Length: 137
Image (cartoon, rainbow, N blue to C red; front, side, top):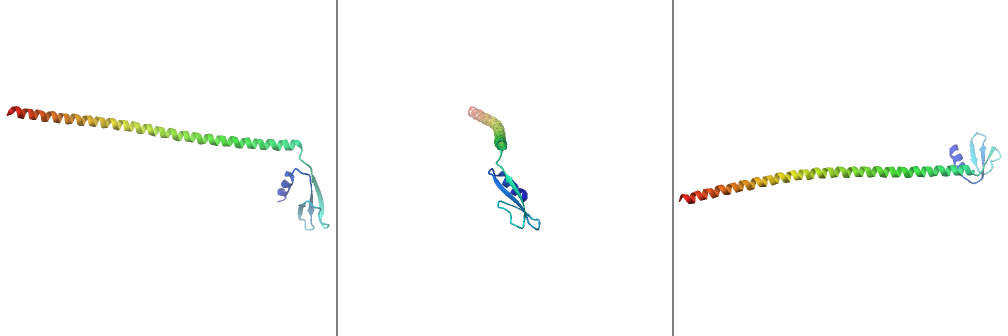
């Protein structure tokens, strides 16, 4: 708790006077107004930040912002790479399906050709039969 108060007080850029008060039980408190009469007092005076400190803080903030931006870009690049992988796999599956379809189509064409040849042979056999029966009369 004590460190939190000090951090809050140090983060302020305005000049302020802070009093550390210790009561008779030994409990320490920090406040902006002077301590009561029955407590011991230790005064702190904080000055405004120096230009170097402000510049350092701004540089740190800039680095943090750049890191966040770089992380966001890296995340987006990973998402793009994953998307490209999904597209590549989909294209591969499509090519496999087309090849499989082509093979099926070729088998189907062969089956049709076989059927047509068989039908043609049946027609020839039937015509030969009819011709023989007609010639035999």
